[in-house]
Length: 417
Ligand code: GDP
Ligand code: IMO
Ligand code: MG
Image 1 (cartoon, rainbow, N blue to C red):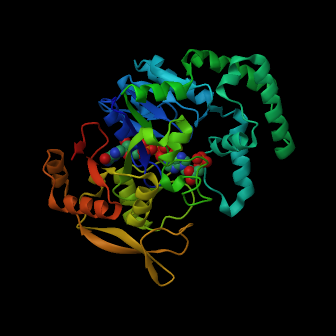
Image 2: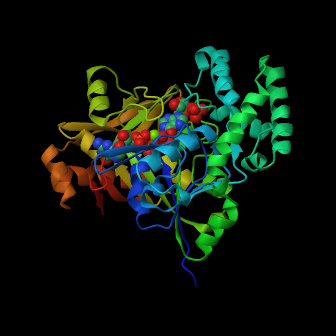
């Protein structure tokens, strides 16, 4: 029997857990990396030989020359794809390994404007989106007026569908977007990636069926999931492991393993609850040490302590069995580190987050800290006691094994347990 080996890599918090680094690390031993949801709202950083690459659409496996699939569940901004391909080519990478699903949805220029317009309407319940047009592109999908990549293959179809979409925008926003201008832009951009089109469902299923190692690269994180996140402060796609099945068109039983990526503390960009949030000087230090500034928008990320109720829930809904614990180096130098093990809600202690996280009060334990030199010991394979205890706490809460510890941006700063 062929050994089927597909593995989903998903964020267990609010995004920016270090998924890009972990996918890049695992991609060298894989054959294919697949983005299955989200769009250019993602910002995945990979550092190779001191050079930093930020991916918004192209899967992080591209740096290893692996087949890099943008699957159907993605909303694809052609302008960003072309820009990313050019950047890769300028740095000597082969972009012919990229594959783009014919069924993926297009993000069009007016989606960005709509994103800003909707945020404006929301007033004090604005989401703080990346303004990449992601929500509006998924809205068009649900309204059944979206354009898909294969529409670019016929000018007649493209014009017809664009006209319909623009009619909706005019009725809803009262704004006229230039059809000819959008059409010309799309045609020009399409020439750059026309040769990369594929039926990603067939490509990915065949790869799994023939025993290839396939990685599904999640974007965002569990608490930005449209159903399971802190709604309405979420993104518009299914970011959890199940999203790999719907987004890439693979059956659940083929996704054999789920690796959750969790930061050793918590961060969030944009609005919405963050129960363990800290402010002031301590937050400033953590933000500076961790370089916690958005990879897509440059916004400072809000920071807080590790939140185990969130990880518990993320392990549950994703079916996480393995965890990559990242940015353990960033916490070095503290004598103790607070970790939330439960929440107090209405006088009761609970282990799982309530739907909107409102009114929860974290219950903390103080864990023993570690030093910079203990981080070095860890990198040489000798895990110091305080890090072992921190890992054990995470494992106990999630019933998953921490199999990777990340202690720096570079590929080499990674320990496999
Ligand atoms: P992603 O969206 O989950 O891929 O994460 P981002 O790339 O947006 O943010 C993670 C940031 O942390 C990037 O700047 C990475 O280079 C960096 N990073 C990843 N892992 C580690 C780590 O273990 N230690 C440190 N210090 N930085 C890391
Ligand atoms: P990666 O893949 C962190 C956040 C935005 C906003 C909310 C909705 O790098 O982990 P959207 O533009 O998606 O409609 O914004 O989600 N957000 C992210 N935060 N990392 C991301 O991606 C994010 N993608 C979206 O800040 O709060
Ligand atoms: Mg990111």
